Image (cartoon, rainbow, N blue to C red; front, side, top):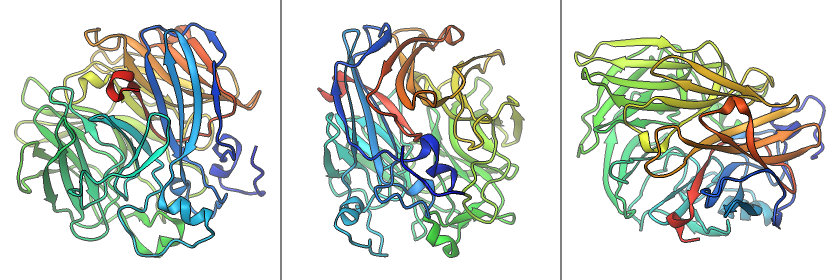
Length: 449
């Protein structure tokens, strides 16, 4: 365990602290049975500051990928590797990174996705960084020179078209640009979107016909540059949700005012049978008053906006439990759906994770949950469908879990339809996986690994 000073921020303590070793181990020990239909890689990204500099916010640590290869009912290997970015190279060379921002200078620490045969490590202030299935860094990827803005860490892949929908935001003009890449990975459309000021726009959503943007009151503040996250809550900014046709060639967003709030992560959005647009999000009542904090994250709740055909907006809290890291069945992104999954966040004091997982049935309003052993902290879990034509929610929830009792981590696999029964398998790893951000299941055929 990395030693940290007294009164250190939460992201320097316990399983938030970085690990120092890059490890590769084959033939991992499995408790239970790995479902044989799981054939691919589970990859997850997160901050792991090489220099152990905890004066800057947790969100800006150097990106490290943690991956497990599953095939034939076995866990073939675990590997963790830094994403070899220019910023990391500067640190290893003892250089101080220049103030001038370049789109290729990235910490690549927030998410990792696969699209059009490429694996991309993402952070929202730079272009993607391509990595190989072995987690070796290939280099900055700008869609063959066509991407001239940052790329959100939360692109959305449409299950109907295979298109990659994403955006970039910046403190400079253009502040927000909406992009679409086709199924083959060619950037086919970029549309500048006008907003009131540089806002921290972390995620967005799509429906079958629209993209959903959130213009919310966490705005840029240069006085906070030393934190690495120069944003703060602004009471006078207001909040609104915007809808634009996915095929738009110019800014034609229709904006709808909502109560002031902040959202990192939508769960899903869709167009209902009555013509309304439904947007389910994890909503903070406010966030970062005075700037980014070091004591944890504010509570957030499952929330629904419904924008009717006449433009009237209704708002509803769907649950009183605090949660984060919402995910759903990837085959239902942008479509009417039933099931969502999230991690409770009110048991660790950080607001980042706990030992309890929740399944939501957003149609009936019912939910179920499962709590792991004391001392367990969960990371984000993703749903892997049992097959291409399986019913919604039929499949496996996969993610990392840390145990403070033995200071180690496991890749946990759960039956998504029966989470109350607990894990069907735990793949024990050779070292702990620090709390991080986002990852995905990457089927072997998607990358030819």
